[in-house]
Image 1: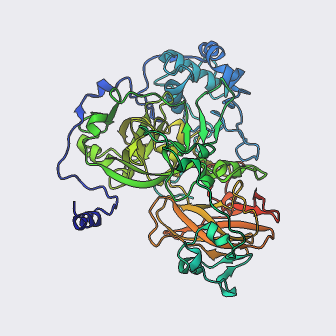
Image 2: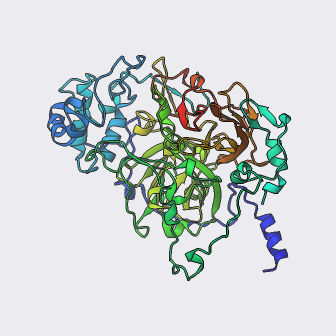
Amino acid sequence: MSMRKFGIKTATAVAVFTLVTPVHAQNLGKVVSESDLVNWDISIGPDGVGLPTGSGTSAEGSNIWSEQCSACHGENGKGGPAGDLVGGVGTLTSPDHIKTVGSFWPYSTTLFDYVRRAMPYYAPGSLSDDEVYAVVAYLLSQNEIITDDTIMNADSLPRVEMPNADGFISYWPVAKK
Amino acid sequence: MTSSKLLPLSTEEHTAGNGLVSRRWLLRTGLPTLGAMGLSSGIVHAEELRVPDWSSSPGLDLTGYGQPSPFENEVVRPTLPLFPEGIGDGSGVSFTPLEKLAGTITPNGLFFERHHSGIPEIDPAEHQFAIHGLVERPLVFTVEALLRYPMVTKTCFIECAGNSLFNSFDEAQQRTAGEIHGLIGNAEWAGVSLAQLLEEAGVSPQGKWLVAEGGDAAKMSRSIPIEKAIDGDAFIALYQNGERLRPEQGYPMRLVVPGWQGSMNVKWLRRVKVVSAPVHAKDETSKYTLLQKDGKSRQFTYEMGVKSVITSPSPGREPGAKGLYQISGLAWSGAGRINKVEVSADGGASWAEALIPDQTPSRALTRFQLPWQWTGQSATLMSRATDEAGTVQPTREAWYEPYAANQIFHQNAIQAWAVSSDGGVSNVYA
């Protein structure tokens, strides 16, 4: 390639990043159905859409907690090396605030979503849906948000009102100060 | 050699207190090197130069993948596990050693890490990426398929929203620039436009948000406004600085959302789901939200603020003998380009404008520099960046004003380094 040609090419190739609609669509994605994604589609929003069948109570969750969760998150969800998940309600305006599921998390559904996707840390996905509901019920009960015998399932969980549900200000799309 | 072009320093070249020299002098002298500027012109002693061993016999053989010189083996990422051993192994951070690098590109092996459940060992032949949810056609892509799309390239930074968290402590921590501000890296990424793939799937009118999810054990997930992809600049990176992504950077693919919180640049990307509203994942409620003094928390604060840090002098890059030095550092903004960087040597009492390129890159690191005549007196060095939106980097006090104690996210306050009369450099709150 001559130097002159090279000069012309580099001049036109000055990289400015723009997303242009491609002239020739590639269409290399394989079309699938939503049911093919059943093992991956694990995101649960506040409306609870996608919560699986199954149920659990705090009493059932208590045993699972002792065996699978307490080493990192502490007996009763306090004092573990991974930080407190229980308590702290009313502390958010104090310099010694404690952010827990009870004092800080705005939605109960986030708890199901996260426990099912990522916990226990060394074996995520090993709990059955019933066990996830039970652990979620245990944490909500320890935080005194539900009673010991409240059954958590796809219907009841999204209706749990979290103490700090109104504690967040959305900065998207425009700051509402 | 640039020393012959050095012009004498006159008093008018000193534009701010405590020895800051005008960037005009720097421009006129044609960017002299630090070494050349500090040297005296007088010949002290001439000695016959020896021929070293490496000039006297053939060197090492060719290698398949080059490595840094063994003399550079201290240029590594300081690592910081977040939990005691046996609790959450693989969850932690490593820092880009900012003070040991020059220019603006972060080498791939030194690019900071933040993992929530270790680094997955992904076989690219078995990895798949899905787009589904509120679309006409749910799609699954192989890595091989994505490599056949038109490729976009973008040089941008990725900065962890928790960067500079060590400056949230009540007392200034004695750590290096990298150990405080090194949860940032800057690279040229190449990959596939997310808008193009979404178009192929056909987004329904109800689709307003995306949920991006990783294939690691934590299955990191974040909600992202669809505007960042459609008519935006989000893309799926396959290459970093010319080579395929490193495993710790998301191999075989990661999302890149230029200028936004680091954790939204989801690594090991396996899925983008089109939804109508944010899912309020753990890492956009429990974490990566900003608690205010009044008990309320800011959520979905995506854009990383305008920021700068002096990397030399800094702890570990002490000036040594008094004389002429280059103050050098990095500036960036999630809002776009850097318009101005100012430097102070007297703790913010006076400021001088630093030299930056005529054309600074958008949402990427900019290198600034300014000559400094260190007289041996104590000094407090600061840098203050302004971006194209006109936003000025705040003082630490102003930044903290709305926030609760120890609020660590989106810390973009001015960094102050104290230079003592013996040449030591330390982190101070000023």
